[in-house]
Amino acid sequence: YLEGDGRYDHRILRCVKNRFGATNEVGIFMMDEKGLMEVSNPSELFLGERSTNVAGTAIYPSLEGTRPILVEVQALVSTANFGTPQRNVNGFDYRRLSMLLAVLEKRMKIIIGTRDVFVNLVGGLKVNDPAADLGIVSAVASSALEKAIPPDFVLIGEVGLTGEVRSVGQLKKRLKEAKALGFTQALIPHSSKQSIKPLPKGLTVKPVATVQEAFNILF
Image (tube, rainbow, N blue to C red; front, side, top):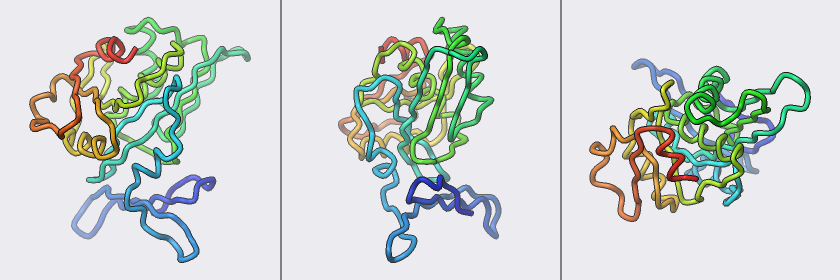
C-alpha cells in the first residue's frame, strides 16, 4: 500500500507480505510528468533540506525492510503555556516517545514534565524501529539544553528504562549508508562494537553503554 503526507511529492510503497510470507520492503517514489518514478537514493531526499548546527535535530539510519534510509529527527521543547503540557509526535509511536521522555527526566535529570514536546520525523516517513530511540532522546535533549548535536554524527541504539543503550539489528548496513552520505562519526551501542568490523573507511565509531555517555560526547 502507498503511504505518505499529502504535503510532499513523494510516496512510500510498503509491502507487508508476499506469496512466500511476511515481508517489510519499501520503495520511495516521486510524482512527475511521467508518473510515479522511483527515488534511487531516499536518504538524500529526506536530508535534502536539513539544517545543521541547530539545536533539536539528529540523524539516525533507519532500516525499512532491508533498505537503510537516513532520517532527520526534529524535536522542539518549549514552555507549556496552557496548563497540561502537550506531547505531539509525527512518524513515531506516541507511547514509546512517552517512555523515552520519562527516561530523560528520571535518568538524565532533564526537566520535561512541565514543558511541551514536539517530535517530527522529516519527510513523512513512519518508523517502528527501536534503533531510533537514541536519535530521538538526543534531539529532545538538544532542544531542551539549547545545544546543537555536531552535524557529522549519526545516532543508533535502542534505549532501555534504566538509560542503557542496547544493540540493534543490521548495524553494519546502517553505518555503510551513513558513510556513503558523508557522515564521519557514529554513536552505537557498546555491546555491538565487535560485530561491525571491519568498519567503513573514514567513519569513526564511538560505542556508548548509556544515554549519559552519549550526551557526554554530544554536548
